[in-house]
Image 1 (cartoon, rainbow, N blue to C red):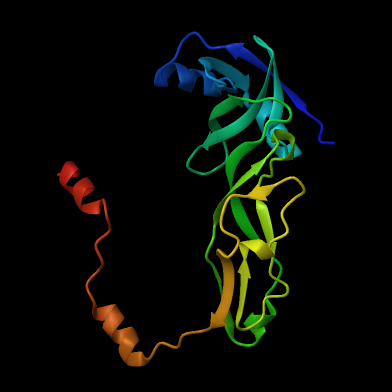
Image 2 (tube, rainbow, N blue to C red):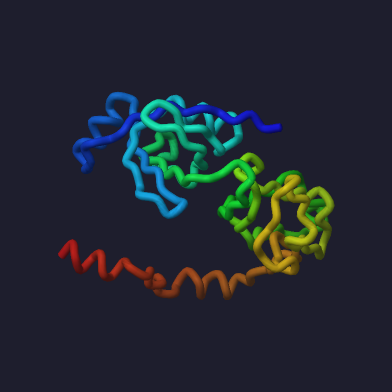
Length: 210
């Protein structure tokens, strides 16, 4: 049974970027609670408390203090370096309600196919799943210790945590191991001499700066 952590929250009367910056400077982060067709509520919560809950491995919490609600940490906005939480979205949930969320996919182990000259390519980097709040995983780990050359691991081959159901076709490829493609010297030179590909959005940004 997953222990449900408590988070003390306060009502946040003032909003805006300047006010939020002052909050973060004092170790408090802005948050919002929504869901169940009720009005959203602006909150504030101690950053250390949120980080402690995330380290615990569960995002199902009981909000205390200014209100009493069962909630799920739906999303955390991090700074550029991924070190500090800037904002938290809570969604109202009941204990046995099934929710949907998208979690990252991480590879674990070493594929034997690499020793045979293969290259591992991760095709699926995140996946949508359904589960009860208390069973919500931080990530889905895929063991590649049995991935040979050639080899493929589909969603249906992945061992999901108990109570977690993937919301994607079972034949979707997660990771594969194929022979390395050799690049000839002529192809490498042609690639080096070629024009830099246009990056979508770059041209617009450059024009705005101009």
